[in-house]
Image 1 (cartoon, rainbow, N blue to C red):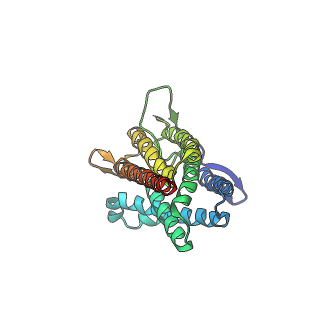
Image 2 (cartoon, rainbow, N blue to C red; image 1 turned 120 degrees about the vertical axis):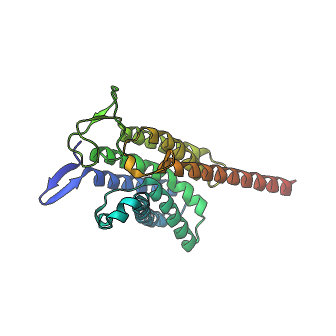
Image 3 (cartoon, rainbow, N blue to C red; image 1 turned 90 degrees about the vertical axis):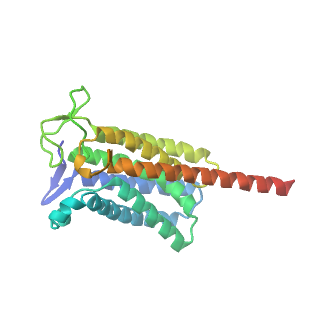
Length: 260
């Protein structure tokens, strides 16, 4: 793959950065259009996207430093020029920043949490295409017919057939986006879409990790760092789903009793 898409004078447009930008713009467009249909305050969507993106990228970088703390401890100067990110850090950081923004602006967090999560899945789909172009987040060596061989990557081993985990992840993310739109259309209570995002993404990521070959991302026992985090995000999603469903049933019973 060629990460350098094109050159405009002295400016080089890189595939990874371009696809990240496309993902953010797509997330913004979809979230704003859905906000209009749901009659939510559209003026907040742009700021939510911007602040969540900033918080997400910062948290993704911090978690990357944490998972590689031994390497950076030996050579602290590598921190400045390190290229890696950990997606789970971005998800957690983006959610926290979104919660803080909603709290400051006195918005109903679960409403906007549900609104934004399909867009996050969409952005991740574009982001994984960027990973493919750059060669990062690569898979294990394979002799199977479905493989990719990088010849000029700064991240993946070159001239070796690898499992195209980036493409699989991108496909799952786009499918996840469509599934969350379906859930959003049929949801009974605020928070259900966000809960489903946490559950579906965590399960998918846990499975994909078995095929990843970039082992320098760290591990916890026999699990990769992302698999370890996936356990907790799955549990968090289940707890959130059960909580909002229980609350919805209680409110339905209260309304039924008041009418009776």
